[in-house]
Length: 251
Image (cartoon, rainbow, N blue to C red; front, side):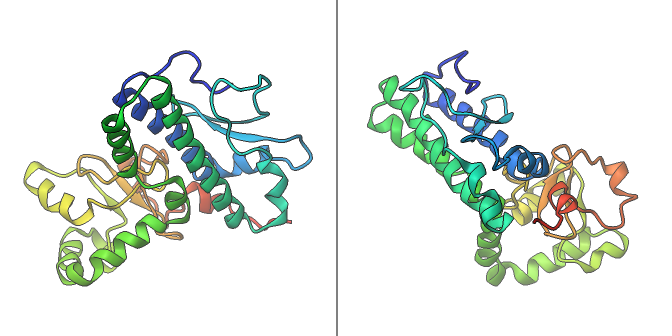
């Protein structure tokens, strides 16, 4: 059921890798695959759970039948609340429960394999360096970054952004797409955009990868996460991410 029964992570690094894989899968369900996730959470079905797997995949399914389960179980019955609240509020609720489940699984492994105080602290610090699923889905992490840096970096960021802009896109706060940089540009660019987070996987910006910004929600994405290449981006006048493209009126 959980996709993690095939192996048991025993070191701090292995548990963190397991955490990141499950987290990436759940973020994918709640962002780039949100339309499919919404449809699978049919309120007419029985109690459903959102599972994230170490291989960065996700699944909506019934809870494990065995009692007690092999691993902690995610929140039960997420489908029942789907039509009783605004979609963004429902996704936020699922995100919070998903964060709690990821921590439960990580520290279950820690307890099972005898992590001491130093190991538990190191694992938590590694996890805490990543934005939560809730922060990625709601855009809270991006807002916090903007608020923290706007006062001190406003003038320098404006000049750097303008110098790196392409064509008519230079009027925006950032260029529409960020291309991989040469070595001499890399340090400066990492300083400018280093705290930008991918709206799909939640990872930080790096200057050696292509990124693109949604013109609707203004979230940034790895090109590979949303299947957009630099060549294709050149022909897109207004880019909408999968989540914004799939938004429609809910009954």
